[in-house]
Length: 472
Image (cartoon, rainbow, N blue to C red; front, side, top):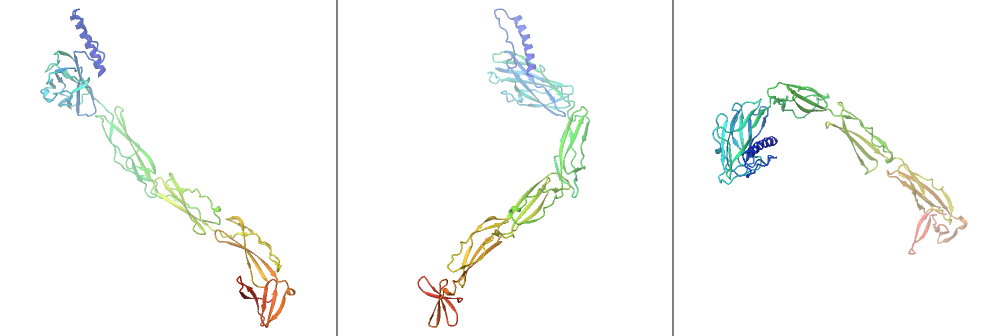
């Protein structure tokens, strides 16, 4: 609109300039400035612009703005507005607040599609408005669609067009009528379109019967509309997601689409086969988890997860693996495997030295450490323990032992017999009916008349005690 007004305003300027050239004397030698923008109209020209509007299909009300350019130091204004009452019925004014003292009282009576308007600056100082400011809005009821268009015009009937400034000058007025057109056809539209639908399949099947309210089409402006669709309410849908499309096409080829998704999920639980339970001896024998597969009667994707727990508080160790499969509809199933780690094999020990016999006074060989090997624990060495009997001959017993993590025990022993030095090495004496035998290996031995022998022991504090021993 601005460009249209600019072109017309330049035309007004050219006509005004020619008249000024013909009437001005050389001593005046003053001419209007050339207009190049609607924001800089002729100094003595005010432009009144009526808005152009294209009605939407079936639009029944209308609001038209009347705006001004070049509204500088204006003290009074009057004009008339005219329209075709066959198409538009006057329904009041609004948006009058941009101009002081601008109220409904400034408007006269409506008569046969005309409305007079007048305004006066109450202070007679002159009012200036920014270019394009709305003076007021005209409101109408649309009686019928103006297919060929209709005009809302600024006219001199019944009130003449006149605008004055504070000089005072009666200013030139440029007007631009508003043109109202109606759309004789518009694209159809769907007043309602179903939302996406989620449902479960019939148990034991991979389909579901799905219903919805059929979409409603409007906005054809009387044009015939054809509706096609990829599916209909009550159709059977497979498990998965299906796009449903309704397409409305009018006689002019205008189209509108209604799209929604139908998602069907399986009602049945998927099946997952668990691996067999197993028993192993060592932790190193535990196999990695199997990559399990599943069977879903309706197919589709899913997610499988694994959790593993172990009870290591005692032997055997019990490991529980649980696989959980969840299909795309949230149905789940699990498979469980139990692994028992039970070491029942005892360690093995290196063969100990052979049993031996030594004479009294001969030092027994050093006790070695033996190498052990275990099927789960690996290998290592263990030192043994020694015990010596008090009898005659004395027996030196050496024992090696290894216990694995599950309590399996391996032992090995060696016996070393320590002999006396013989009868010729014993000194005999008879004291009070007792026979005293001095044995260099076993110490002092007393043999009583009844034939019982006792070994005489001397404690750390010098006390004597006896212990019965075999007679040499």
